[in-house]
Image (tube, rainbow, N blue to C red; front, side, top):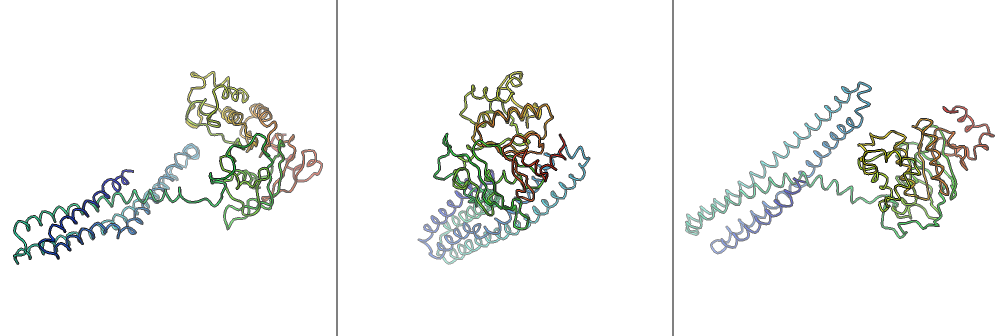
Length: 457
């Protein structure tokens, strides 16, 4: 921001000041000698336009430096986020070498850019000095020829000196501001880029708020999706319908495509083929806010923010009253735990929820889901990291939460989805078996084998 301020509040005003100053001097000296007036005006215009002529080179210099800085900051942030793992594996030295290598690359890029900038600066200084020499030389020549009085000659020298000094300061401000401009333009390209998926557009004709009796059927019609053009499909010809109020479970080994289905449903990615619908509408016809209001998700790793318990729950529905929050917390069986804190609901939760256990953080997520009360509930291995006691208690809360809702569940612990209306066994991105628990067990195929190999019988 400091560099951008140089551009906005110093470079631009100084540019106009030099142009205006050159114009005034040109008009003033036009009465004595036309050629001198033209030289002064052209010099002012050339000096003001010089940074624009060098803009492409300078922009590339600033962008390259920012890109290397981004890489360096990413490596450092990665180390901070994974410091516990690095300590546990005694891998500090490995990551330190990675940081040092990226730091060296950053240093080399800065030195390379410094050389280019220095060359550009010296070139500009030379051109400014050459322009100063030409104007002063013409002034001296005209003075010897009697075409310019001594008073105006001295005045010319003073004007040219002030003009040259201002031009040098102008280019210095441009060099500083150019780095800020490069960063600003990189950010603007991201912010202004249109998504390839219209679901991410908030400008749509459908109302942001779902109607109370909205059709919440979730359907996938021959959906195929790959994360990149060279990778194999994560989802392949996937077809499924989850009727309103039904419970659908997705099971399968790691990499079978379960989480990819959820990401596609939330519009994080666009299918390569096929259509995803909620009700009769494809999800790309929905306003993104309306779509978000129709669904709520409880992830395996619930994130708790560094703010009060009240705000952590109310983030799911900012307009909710305190009584609404209390009711949601009671349904999630977290109310008593919060009330035991020194300031109750106004107690701040530590960064990342460090003051709460894993089960308690999941209950915060449940309270959010109760408060949001969206008609579609998605559970992404919501209890897989909990002990049996916490899992059983939270499953009871989830059963209460899911009443009357369209529920989609991803589960590794298959005991938790026996009562689902339909269970989809996935493999290589597609459905290989579908049916109720009893139906699939009677087949004696993949699902029954998964049940036989499950870790918790």
